[in-house]
Length: 342
Image 1 (cartoon, rainbow, N blue to C red):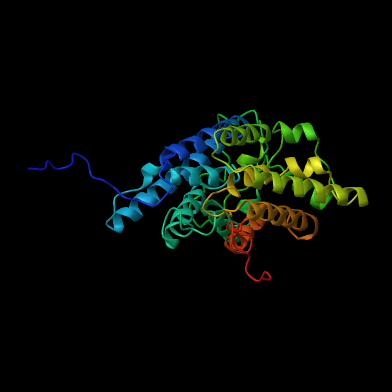
Image 2: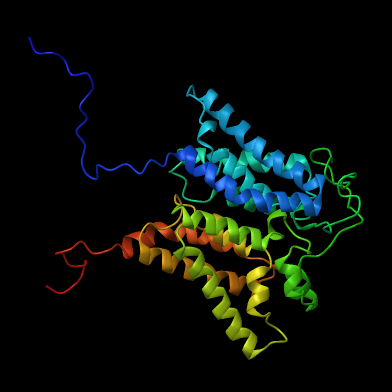
């Protein structure tokens, strides 16, 4: 009598090698890469930044858990993707944003930016940026109100707007500060490169840790968890385009160092544009994708009515990414590209 097999024999197509990188493990490494910048934001802005980061992250986790339960499916918060979305959203928000708005943004990121399209791996746009765009359009004043970093009472007092009741006009805080991009855009006041690099500026929580964001991205690249081509293409394009404009008219256009270190460029280029779900898969597509985003950032910052353009540039890049993969797909060996002469 033939004995039954002790294990099930699975027959699959190639490739047959497994990398061993599960989704939770990848997301844990992304959180670890973002943690230094998040901690620096708390050090710079105090309890307010900690509250916004925590609220955005917890609201993403709660929205995903409740949505899974409502659909009768097991919860998926264990894969870590909701936590990464919440952390990225929190880093892109002003530290003085009312907490109910941060919670609303976290719910929108998961329900609209992610689950509406079918969940992890099916969303065409970065969920954190979808939420930020909706918050920007819905609450423009709180989303462009910034507090000064390193205030003496940042660990003992909260901004007046942070605990504002829902749907009421939040009280303006006395210690507000313009972002470097706004100062240059509307007043032609430049910010020192050292202040930009070491976070002595106002802005979103993730705009202050430039060096730490670069270190976190280098960690992910070293572990082969991030495509270095996309951020390199974005940053090189911004540097080249802004450098050419600065040489032509330095009184009107900021220097490349200012453009690279100010605003949400590093956070967006390193951790949002590189999202493997919403970015192109092909190498050529990645280069063109980064080039497109970089050009859009410079155009919006230089000529649009708003000071910052990273969010819209990446969302437009997300929309174009699938088409880039189709147009720039690598040629299979032994075949011709479509339309090529026989």
